[in-house]
Length: 200
Image (tube, rainbow, N blue to C red; front, side, top):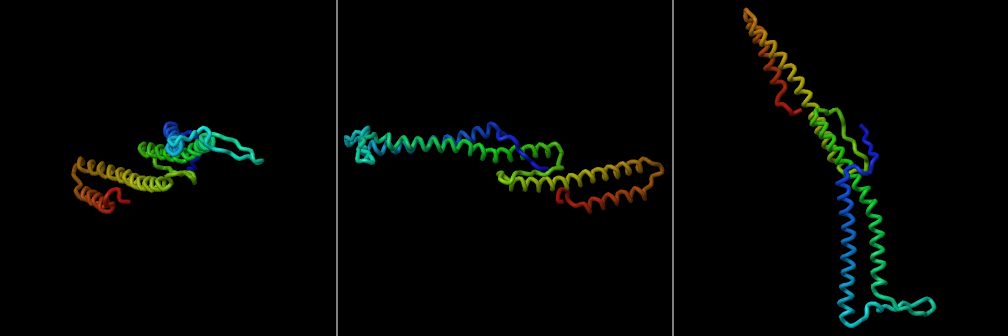
């Protein structure tokens, strides 16, 4: 069964948490780097009596000079760059969370089908999805259950028929011991040939 996903938001709660955590990492990195720079210049220059609002002289093309604040030169590009990164991270995290949430949703659906006794399906994920190896192992499990449950159902029907036949023989008069003995022997042979259940 080919599995296609048309929605990017599959597991809303999971994907929201996933994106927020990515954003928190970027915001946290921005705050840490900004705090480190402020701390560095504060300790190195401000405590030495340097005015940080006019600590850098910028030379123009024609030899003109312009005194500018150190925070304006360093912090503005730093914050701007991190905002750009944040704008890139949001769609990236949405795309990546889609590749994680989609397979999780599909595997949950498959487990529900198995619990409902349905095993006539194969889990198929997209090429770039995560958890493809887990989906393969799940398919092996489904095949294992399908074969064993099918065998168990077949065995149940046969044993039920044999039990009914033996019950009828026991109630019949005169008692047909030879036929009853043959049925018991057939049943014993059946169990010895089948071996231990769920080993197929």
